[in-house]
Each structure stands twice: as structure tokens, then as C-alpha cells.
Length: 164
Image 1 (spheres, rainbow, N blue to C red):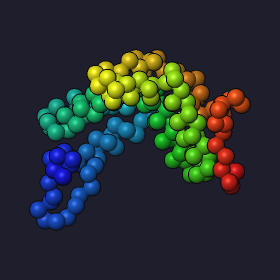
Image 2 (image 1 turned 180 degrees about the horizontal axis):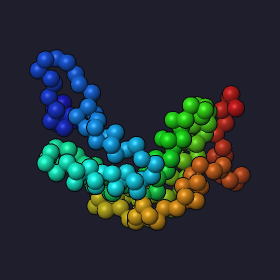
Image 3 (image 1 turned 90 degrees about the horizontal axis):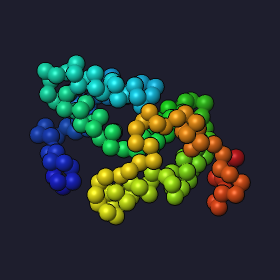
């Protein structure tokens, strides 16, 4: 259990603290921005601003390094989906339909999903070659495509929900 929990040990007083609590200040400072580029810049700034606090500095640097290893397209699509689906006017049906469209597009042969599986699970080289190598190469039009209705010829078609 300790290995699975990253070495975390149960609290001595028996009270469980939320796992994000230690970094909540940084999360709030860095992840409230509108774009992935702004989030990256905020993490860089947070690391510099907290140079005297090694834990905060390390958190910001390791978080940024982790994000930079991810698919740039996936980062932008995920941020858009999280923000869009958090809107109070978005129904569960609309959110599920968007998620379905995203999953279908992510799993297309030219998509980054297969490259991630190859790099992490198949070849285990941990060196994915993403379709776009940098977030600046992912355009709004590319992100829009993940949310657009599926083509009429799509083998599975659009998600059909009983209440739609």
C-alpha cells in the first residue's frame, strides 16, 4: 500500500487531509487561466516567485514538466472540455455527447492516443512523438474539430441518448 500511495503514510492523528491541500495555493494561482499557454507561464512564474520555498518551487517545476510530456492537443482539448462542461447551462447530455466526440476523435489512427499507448505501454521508450510537438502548434480550429459533430460516415455515428 505504501508503494501504491507513493510512500504516503496515514496521518498520526487519524484525520485525513485532502491530497491536494498542500498545493492548493499553487493550483489556484496557476490553473485558473484561460489557456494552456497561460497555465504554463503561471507555473514558470510560480516556481520563480517561490524560489525560497523548495516544496512550492519543486511542485511547480514538476507539474510543468509533467504537462510538457503530455500530448499538446490533449492538453488543449481537455482544458476546453473542463471549462465548457463546468458551465451551469451545459446539460449532462451535451457534456456526454462532447466527451463521446472527443473520445472518437482521439482514437483515430492519426491521433495521439495510439502514439501514447505505443510509447508508454508497447515499446516502453517513454518518448512519444506527438502530432504537434508544441502547444503553439495546436490551433483553435484543431481543438474545435474534437467537439464538432461526427461525420455522417462515422462507423459508430453520434451518441444517441434516450432523453435527446
